[in-house]
Length: 394
Image: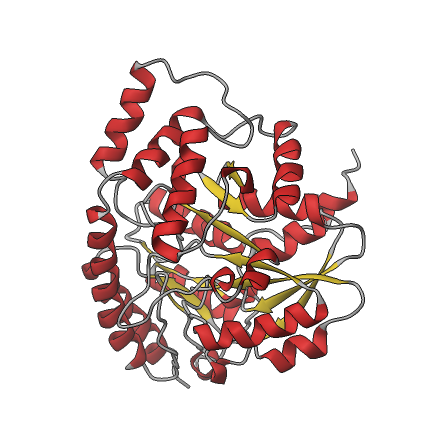
């Protein structure tokens, strides 16, 4: 059987691959520390679980409108009014089966064959693949580690062609945890306005920012940029609801309508019960969100300290999300490995620590460590990584 060319060109997810290897070792009885998963290690807050049960008991188990239940769309509008001082109409919102599906549907509705999308590297693994599935061309632009993995306006200006349709800005970032300041966004936005480039603002980690930093959406900079920005967000990371699969997009009404029509022929609608759970997430107490944020902040401080002390490992301190993205090229070379991917595989086999190689994110010298696990596990992981490096030191 010959498969469609669109799927033959896909690159398998490095995150899922390392998770599969870790699960195999666990099944064999090994003590594996898995730092690959991109999801909170907390259960969904109780009041959200209660809301889901209540919805089921009250018969909310049928189809909903393809773009989401009106109450949830209104709650999303209210959230952006309250948190981001942005005014939208519910017609400008589509609720989707996770933020990933919001992005997928966006690219399908936006791109024609050959259209280019600027993708800053390091990037989330699904960006380039989803663009290719929409017959677009991902244009990868490497952000310097010396600039905290953030693109400059000059880099963007030099990359734009007459086929450039959009740029992705993911702040805070997966995998780096880096955050664009308001001034940096404004400078990038000016380029996009001048060259008529749409901005896809992936804000899925906006609630997980640490220290004195704060989140700014590109749409907050000016009315002109708001009109040229489509926001992608969801409840997966902020409310520990990864498995519920509720995300959304906000932006131009015409584009949102096209996305909604497309969704009606793919998923019909996001899961009804999950929508009512998400409604509770946005309209009830946010105390659980703050508690998770405090835990992640504490873990970041400790893990960053432990990892930064390991010989051959360099790490820029992130400001958000729940990942470290250290450069381990020096350690890998000193350990006799030709590349970081092989080093990561050997680390898993010998010390049973599962990390994600940076090659899947467009950064071959780095690794991604998720600190969405217990402090004890993080400390033990750092001990094992140091032991592995010192054992193989040449």
